[in-house]
Amino acid sequence: MKKIFYSLAAGLALLAGTSCQEFDNYEAPQETLKGAIIDKDTQLPFQTETGDNGVRIRLMEYSWSENPTPYYFTVKQDGTFNNTKIFKGNYGIEPLGAFVPLGETVRDIEGTVEMNFEVEPFLRVEYVGEPVVNGDKISVQAIITRGTTNPSYQQAVSDVYLYINASSPYVGNNNFDDRYDAHLSGDDVADILGKTITLTTEGSLPSGRTYYLRVGARIDTDVDGVKRYNYSDVKTVDMP
Image (cartoon, rainbow, N blue to C red; front, side, top):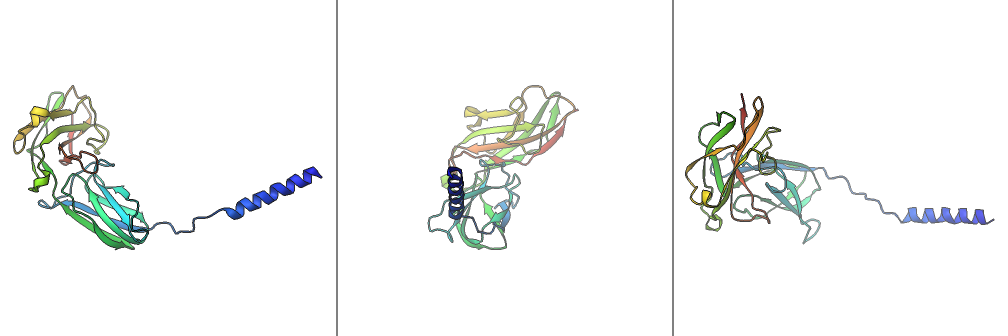
């Protein structure tokens, strides 16, 4: 009889537990927000790095709450973005990166919404000519200028890098081979703006490989808690 009693009790407990469960009956998010970050002056794609230290877009879902928890997603290296998993609703939308803040844009997201943001970069990093192979090293020339006249974003340049790797064209402060990169800081960047500089890889690069290079520079200011880099585009070099 005890065995029968315990079996009945266990069955009733299981049914009670099942009846108290709550199930998520919301439809999966299926709205899309896509577009690009664009340099306001040059109208070229804004170069960044992938991940949280590049450009992030902050969403505030005001249709859910007057004081919502921010939701972030990241922008691709070439400045484009395409988030296909957003709930339908009314959002505050703000890109955050190495550029003068734009502030928040509020709009509804339903179906596919395309938004392009024109920004003023802190710095503009441009090549002078093409990379040159010198024996087992690669040199590039670049010029770094201000991308904005906004007086709040005229801080000194703190770091300049020549980033390099042989694994993929996704190269920057988030993905580089520290055996070969070149880094300038301190007195070496004190008077660097507007001048043509030469950056040469360190060490001896193995021959017969393809290398991806990129110049990054940043000023001494935080964006959302991170000192973020402005970048040139990526160059590809085949070592003989």
